[in-house]
Amino acid sequence: MNNDGHVEDQCWASEQGYSCCQRCNVVLIEENGQKWGVENNQWCGIQDSVCEAEEDVCQSSDYGCCETCNQYYVDYTGRYGYENGQWCLVKNTC
Picture 1 (cartoon, rainbow, N blue to C red):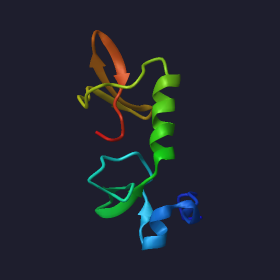
Picture 2: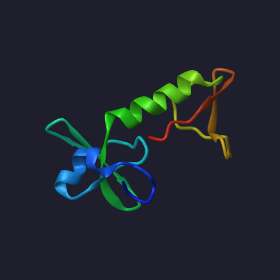
Picture 3: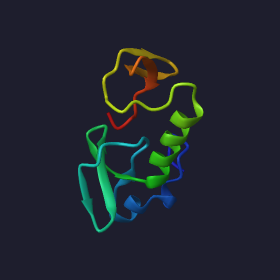
């Protein structure tokens, strides 16, 4: 377990000397079914479970996920956009 409380030994990227992304990131490279992104200026492996959890948060909220990355409001609960006359949560991949 790392300092953030995440279990690193379940991370496929750790076998290659990298950590897994803490958030669902933009996929910069995909090879052999493995997706790579960048956090804190370091390469990291993107786990599907992290991205699925983000989608679950959007679906279980009163707002849903935004289709775009346009951000209009930020507070401690998240980043919000406004689309089709409704507020929505901006995904971490933006």
